[in-house]
Length: 331
Image: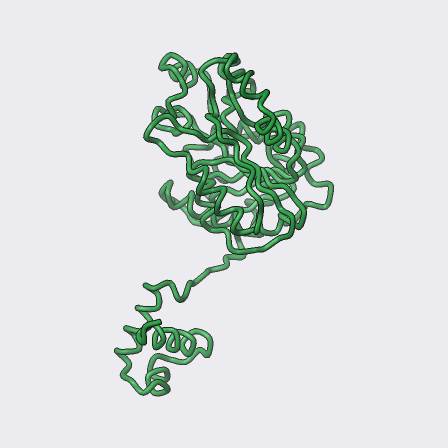
């Protein structure tokens, strides 16, 4: 290690751990105050120190309680902060989602994951929380046939590193071009085993996709232009690449039959289902997904929470009556 790095670490410990002023650090180290300021800045740049702000509103707030009541959720958390850009909202829900997930995963569990920007954000915020016997299962194919990436490998790697887990990759496209090819692939013993493991995960972690010409789910080179147009017309969003309408029905059954991911029925049967979403653009899709009973645990940003509470009725959704049972009410 270079001498400057060693001096920087010494200064950081005195400043942050012993709560000394920069002048006191300078006196202790026998250098000037400007030199201390430069050493502290050097330490930040080198990644020797990180600063985490723990906002108690992330874990307990009126908005979260109202969301839990409205949608019959075991737990809801809201990343507070108004008028965030979409990228910032995704980063913040990823941070809060990672903290919640670390409380949900225990030794011997299997964790099912999706992919995409939101999942990549959550994965990047996971801190090392070693567990014993944890398996991470990819619940949808992630192969792309376009320049758009799905972040599937990055997400899997980060989850496995965080929990000292074994990976279960699903090395397939999420949507096949025809059902005949998919039927053959499903007969492969290794693929069939991963799909079976996915149907039985203890915790499913996923997001909801909005509809729009530029969204990643429509730009992986797996859909014909006519199919894209039909989805833009009929669907409000997707979960695990199952495209659904506002009323919760499958938008295009012929695409559904070519899709490689955990089914929505199998998803609803999982005991813990953590849905993480950020950005107002996802409001319609998220509202429908919650009404479909797809989540037991929810993480959203403040503006998205307000949109859900302002635009929906007070009646709880059907199909999630058991969400608060089974000992998983972490909140």
